[in-house]
Length: 62
Length: 138
Image 1 (cartoon, chains in turn cyan, green):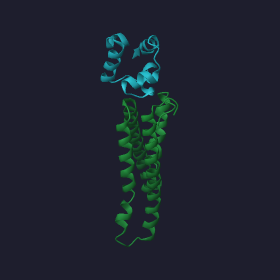
Image 2 (tube, chains in turn green, brown; image 1 turned 60 degrees about the vertical axis):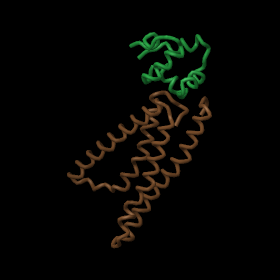
Image 3 (cartoon, helix red, strand yellow; image 1 turned 90 degrees about the horizontal axis):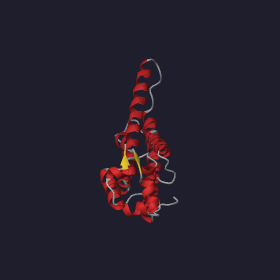
Image 4 (cartoon, helix red, strand yellow; image 1 turned 120 degrees about the vertical axis):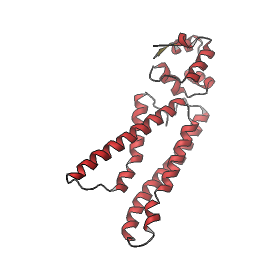
């Protein structure tokens, strides 16, 4: 699944570590999501959507 | 362990402090029980000696489960995948060797076969971490 996470994070000038810390996951989790190697769980996807003030489908798409 | 948080570093350090001694103890108990079973063939002690590797094996699994519980969802997934792949390899290898035993290949020693499960788990885990591009995590 593709996503706009890297773009959204860059717009807010956040590092992967900053984002990981805010969501309570590891930096590696953020990195693998950004690279499309791992699809996040629904709670984590909702957490990302809330943090970036976007809908899930605006961040993730098939 | 470049960009890990303090909590993650503590968790990984604890993992190594627990897992490495438990793995070494398990492998030593496997070798020790094999040696003592040869020496004490006709005593009642063969039963506890034969089962003795279960003690470090229990702690090994206990520490591994605790580590996975402390980790985040990606690590949960990787350890879950690793357990399934390791199980499939063990079952398939056992089946293959079992079929070959029928045609004259020597019966494998279950002690050494059991001792290969631990390294196999960590080899599969290393492969999965590489596949996901994770370089600095346990």
